[in-house]
Image (cartoon, rainbow, N blue to C red; front, side, top):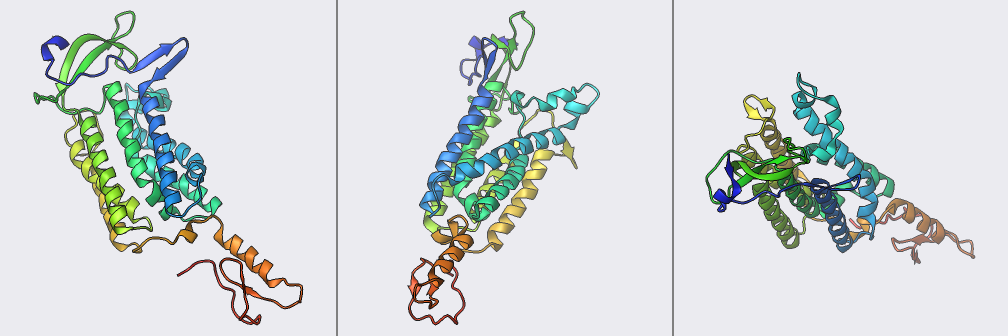
Length: 333
């Protein structure tokens, strides 16, 4: 080991990732996750409104999607790193300690999508359109979350001598015992490694820019922008994962996250190619369209003269109707 003063050319890690205020532990990792979620919700809601949806919709859906996503992310991490928690030297109770890090993005997206689907069903809006609105915000939230990995000194790659290599400090508690997670740096550099969390952060920001540009130029919808986000993220995660040296489960000699990235990438590209082209009309994003259209029709059919009148999508009576035509829907095809 060498002291940090001998390696000033390299990127330093934070001296600690947890601050104790009385009985309260402020964890940088958790704070980054929270900030990322808030940014995704606020930006996603603005994008949803710009597309014709109602303000506050994304927050309503997030009440379902965020808890599902956190559970899914943790489940994926525990399942793909089973031996760490349930192996011979593992401690099963640590599987519940989400504050120690360990959230798998694919599990978060999968179960988060289930939660979002429930919320969309309850509100009466299309899930694919919502996914397009929140996609840039989600990947930006992932970039913010990677800052938490920096504070935790985790998700780094192999040893390196490149100028942007990251110093990993030895951290100890007040008694001088090594405590990687809750300890404070003692100035000793254990190794210099590739900051793969930083590579992924930069890649995620590039995906954000790509999504915004594509969305503005081509106005795509029906879940295709969300699929582009998934494909773009997986493409970067695949090669970044190959640079990591930490313990991981392997499938056919390939790190499980690289394996998953490849499979999900193929699925996302297939969806992007095969899904409906164009973008949803603004009226399709309004909640419970069918219920409101039915109510409008019912109101239009009642008149003081006793003559039924057919209404259009706005609820205005159609004077040409004589009561024999089919009811018009609220959707403009």
